[in-house]
Image 1 (cartoon, helix red, strand yellow):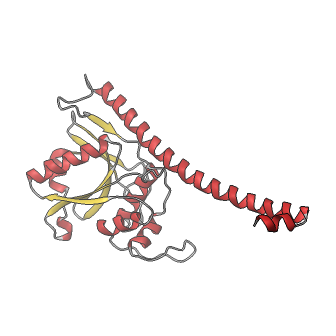
Image 2 (spheres, rainbow, N blue to C red):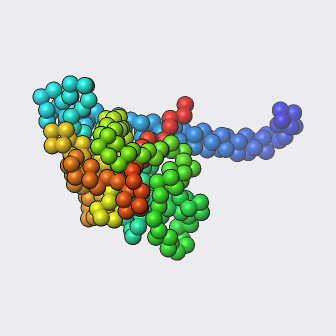
Length: 244
């Protein structure tokens, strides 16, 4: 390569180096942009957790329970209105937006079915989406999410509620299925120990889609009865892993 550059005319050599410089700059900029997006997503989660801790301190004497957990947290989750039967991919899109990543519910639905999404083509796949399929879909985008199930009894409810609170304390919203009376997915954005309730964002109602569900009522509707299954399920989420 060096010998070829030496034998070239000065003008040709300059043009070749210029093209190489442009390619290198484009490559570096692309890599930097990906890193910046990951860093911003991580910072966003940290900011929301700090804000939530500050809010808790204002609504309780100490802001913590005797076990050192927050007594209240409500993450700043946005809203996307779902289309018919697209509750799961829309809830996933809401959470991904919170993590700083804008994704189309229709695209996520297509990916959950293992097919490519072309925005310009007609969309008609308004069918139920299972958690295992949305977990696989977001994995293709680099996310590591998990579906978790708990027994449909008092013990299972308490263990599930503990998981919800722990994830929220780390700034990670969740998806849960409720039967009220039909199966439907909502995003859990927070909880309040004083009021004994969780905060949810429901994509199937008008904006901002926010309301509370008290623990007693949650225990009766958080299940898979609409799908003839005897357990409670949720999806644990996380932002894109940071790659150094």
